[in-house]
Length: 158
Length: 447
Image 1 (cartoon, chains in turn blue, cyan):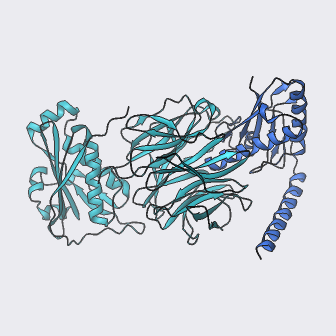
Image 2 (tube, chains in turn blue, green; image 1 turned 60 degrees about the vertical axis):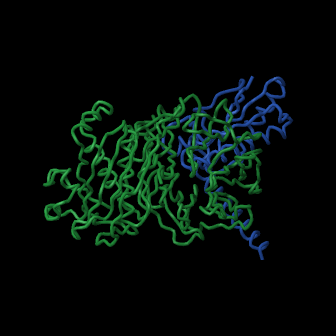
Image 3 (cartoon, helix red, strand yellow; image 1 turned 120 degrees about the vertical axis):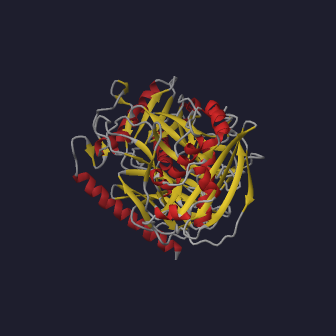
């Protein structure tokens, strides 16, 4: 009974995410794909060609294809510079309750950490902090501003 | 550090017969607030002279009556009448009101009182009169230090409110909140505390580190909150009388969303590690930590039922933020929110029968209440952004914060405290010196 219910729910969620991603791919603006920020406005660089941040969809901590590409570059840079340690700062937009956003920021930064670790970066070199919605980079109250704020930023710690 | 609390002694000196014609029904939106006359408290000339020196107030009797009037007005249940229409002098009215005069100005209830300054103490007595029945309903006296004069007004209001509504008041209380200043991207946040009516604001931290979500211990003057001290977000404990702070959630990761258990002996909070937030408790006496939830989803914003037997919390285990209830040992987890939209910040009412929450639906934020089984959902207020309700100690009023939209430069942004009755009526801006968020209402300070 319960199992079938879980399967049914899982199926519905899958279906929903398929529908959502289908909509998302259609709606490509200059700076957003779906509601994930794809622009360069706030991005800084750890080294030439190595962007410091990745962006997330609303309520999501899943890494997009573009994010994974960015993180592979970060991993390569970290492998080359083996003395460098980093802090991953996870953030959320202002459209959520404060406490949930703290947890969400932590989840986002950790999905970045996990990805870097699968590319050979030791967990000892990475620490994680969540700021929830407390440190936006864009102070606007509009979808583009929110998309820039849903982010994980890799910051050199030493 | 904060030592503005002095002792208050209350003693009953007479309670007369308890039958009364006036009664205020607080269970529905009150469209006809009770007309009440608050006569200035009379002060004899010797006392007045001495009090003018110590308190720098011209007429303390009239100041105290203003505190009472303002409280009654903001409750939404009473309509304090203009003093210009009062015919009887305060000292005489306090002895024996001429009820015809008071009913002439349509007062149904009358408060009178007297202040005496003796041995560096303030002795205050007051009486509540039923104008139509021509009877005294209650009389009380108490003694305190003069600097507590505003609290005198709050205690009088609590007694009058209780006598006329049959429920405890919430006026001799304080609000702890986060004071906010500066641009959105570099917001400075400090812990601040004030009386329920916005007076006597004190700042408890300097703003050097980010602080969030302060909550009162329901049994004493302790506060728990989240601080980013040394860039490590952890749950702290603060004694607001001594100013002593200590970290309590010193785990190998972020601890957040703290709240006290109803007996004040435990802190319940979230602990996040490796991308997963679960709920834990810490016993403040022996520091024993207990894990309450163990689920790969986000579990946060826990709040105990007033009997301590249950916990409501926020989880996205269904895929999105919803409200759940479980037994306090973490068993029997049950989802209770099933309406459209996302639900967060559940807080159990001190009366036990309701859970207040924040709801996000179609780009709007709502403060609402539901029964503890999730039935009877009622949305009290809708806005661009608002969250984090906190109950008045009698469970009749909610205080929360609201943010306004900003343009692309960040202009137009503000964060303010608001209150609303459980009935959905009487929505009010709670005045604060700075922008403000994350309010938490204390228990009654006296009785």
